[in-house]
Image (spheres, rainbow, N blue to C red):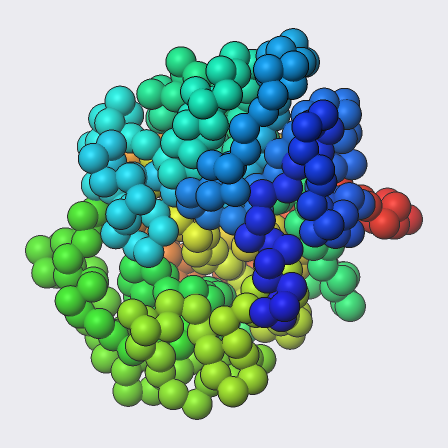
Length: 412
């Protein structure tokens, strides 16, 4: 995505408000041919779409006439938030531990949680005396974990991002168990859980992408994980992996980086051929050959130490290539995936990690699943992969049902 195009994405867009003139950017094809049709144009009722993270600054300038307020309270206003909420503590909203959102230890009281986006909407509601507002977010159980906002708005889970995810064109779509490695783990933006799992996997039978030099101060001061006081087998393996990353990195697939990146200075990878506006979720990178040679994808979603489940095109990726997956994401992400019609792998390994709300304990449970897979030979995993075939084919087909077919071609 070019810098010139970025302004389209970081704006609030609106439709069907009697006293608001639509923005030119709101006629962008992604909005008018994909997102709006995918939600049936919200029945042509007043609609906001927000494609960015954090405080909705454009909303602070919108003041409706009395006539419009009466109309909005009659027909309702709907917000579609296309990105996960930026959740923080009630006394630190807007000041987050990871640039634009906060990580937690898993013991937080929902009554004390706030979200930057919902706070902006709350101010808009109060200022305009609105009484009929619904917010659709990609955060599973957001209403449960953010009860503070129930007085002003209904908060529901409806994910416009995954509904409009990219269809991946797989050149060789055949089902094959002819692989030679056990794992793939792909990472783009730096986050602590991605750094930890990359270190855990880098010395195993795996293909990983990771571009960041180790910053131990960041990894040893997390609210949810104590590296220096975790079980010795995990601690030793992570430290060995961090050393490998620093000595042999960056670990690249088809996007090449010559040197390791400072995760504080550049949390998004940048080099001479990749700028900070490249987004693999929008501009998919061809990695088919790497998926063909692995058994299982250890998916690192954008968030981990948060209360609300969320998934993205990252979890779709192994499904396109008919591979099983372990998902590093907030609790109940697998449950959310199953509710969306996908199948997971509890018949083959322990998926109890998904229900574990203590983020460190969930990480350890994921480590144990990885160790279980590592205990199998490649031949044993090939047999397991064949046994998974009905699940993998189901997920592959379900993708085409769940993703909005804006080109009208996915069922050909």
